Length: 296
Image (cartoon, rainbow, N blue to C red; front, side, top):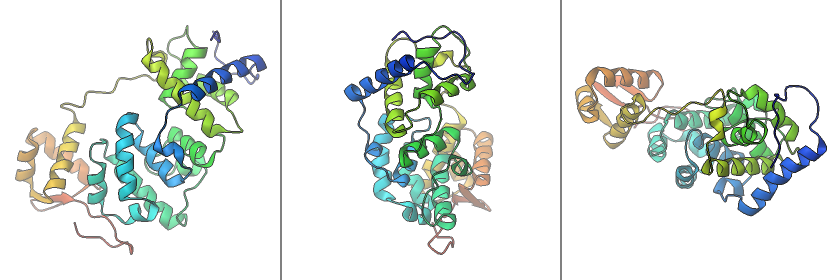
């Protein structure tokens, strides 16, 4: 496709109709031929779409597909997730990484139940006030769960616009892409349009050089091995296997250096993952239906 522009589309001019039609045809033709099948695309249930969007943050689709089914089987709706012990939520989440997302997801469910009568809000602005939901995730939830036209960027969408409109540019900022996202948006069916954009972007990643390298916001994910993320994961995994441990037992089991591990244990306590009383450490309890602490 020959769509290219040297200057950023930061003005208010509409795209030429032929250019807009050509771009949409490219995306929808690919989607019709090679659209990906995913379980969360077969539902309009806001809860299930919320779960998928939180899971997909910084995680490959293949890993999410398996864990999504397991998570939905364990917690099929907002009430079941809201009242579950945190220990159970973290156990089901194991293998996904970034355990903060699991805690955030449960906090979202609890707030939906207490403040919104069990219904997820359909406003980007409101969703952004929930833990673990930023602008991109809020926009995706509103588009996919409610089919409302919203403007957002995620890694695959960014890749498409860089590839098509900024082939000869480096250091492209998202503020240069967002006007194009808005101008090309299919407002009649934003859900399907964004699915198409994401699938086309996923295909581009498999081809030549990743266009996202030309983004000013591009960063490589730091290695997991030897990172604080790995130690956080080991601490929680250890305490899921053995509910209560002394500090010395936990430090020995993790085996990553007492001072560093101790600092991370303290962080997990501050974040609400762990309880520490005297020399004992355990995973924080969840809440029962009445909001009281449930024993681990």
